Image (cartoon, rainbow, N blue to C red; front, side, top):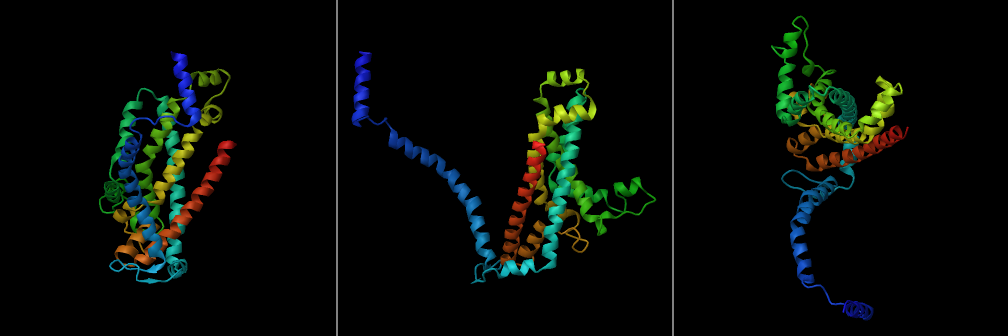
Length: 308
């Protein structure tokens, strides 16, 4: 009986008369219906804003009257000739790279220390989560109070020194970077710590018996095990730093002067205070190109470092 059924199935397949599975068209329609909300969300939340920015960047657009007149590349040429806009690009990239590198270095060091201090690790890990779950607006307000020259924590700890970093051109952006590092370094710690937990303890023990200790042990045993995670964390941190807005808005409002005006804050000012949507879209478009170039360069260096 089994042989006869198998022969009939093979014959039907050979002749192209294989019966369709029951419920095939209905199942296909159900699958499309279930995936439609996801596809619609991607189109609305992703494609529509992108098309809007592209259209506004090449037209004369205001907040109330977008797409009034096609101006070609005039908006792009205008912002590239604006020294303040170009300076904000350079300032944002430099800020993001420095903050990302500092966060990753501190995060790796803290994660390695936590992994070795097994007794106090649970308590410290809980404390490290506090900056990460704190809203950026609250973080900005907290650090603004810390740097307040009239009774802030910094003024209290150093009563004989007159310090007002948020009002100083040279120190406004580094002060924001300090708050940024304080908030997001715990993310790096968690990622690297999780990678350290996957490392085989026997490998480290064998290396220790062979005489590997300290920096040598980290370089030859620990680093190869966590290099991929650290590089991924660096990219995540770099993207977060490039998008910084809340801390600048709360702590300095881009000042003093243009000292802490990053590109995201400049876009908000141009779009919502000057109502020039065309110029704001052009800044966004050029900034997206710059971010792409920066990430490609960082990826090349990271790939080379990991290979070495």
